[in-house]
Image (cartoon, rainbow, N blue to C red; front, side):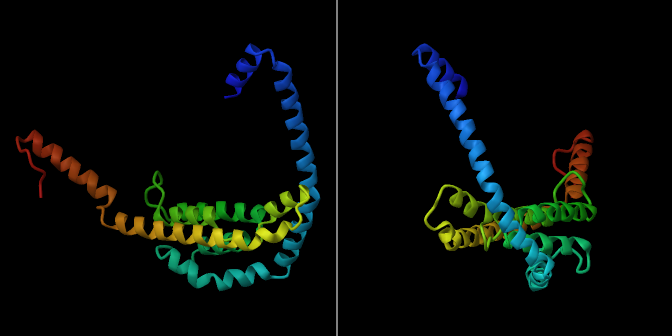
Length: 212
């Protein structure tokens, strides 16, 4: 689209308009970025205080029963559950910078439980869905952007954002449960390979039906 825009502007003799728009866009981007820095630093500082005060640990304990329900195939005392709870707690408070490394560590621990290293396990898919849709109590970044553009009430989106993320999270959980049940009805990959091998052998022996 950029190439088409340049070609169209050149054909109409308005290349100077495109150049001006490019520099104006770059200027706006830099201005917005600098405007966000102070607001983001403030909110992240508040969240860090909450983290140091133990709020994240309390949230993680409160989320324990929910996490065990969402990840039934992960052993009860496995380290992955701790990282998952920390990731969910950080996302609840809008601590994306803290949630990301916890999510990565959780995936690494879940990979250790994965018998087939080339295929994601149901638990890994669940974590990805929950982390993507995550309920957010304080949308820090959106509030900062609205403040930078002189919004009359930057925090008025808190309620609607909370509602939207709740709906998204429940939709993700519903889809995850549905696919888990659907996947549970399929035979294991090793069984499929075994059946395929036996079917090939039976064809070589002159049979045209898979062996039972």
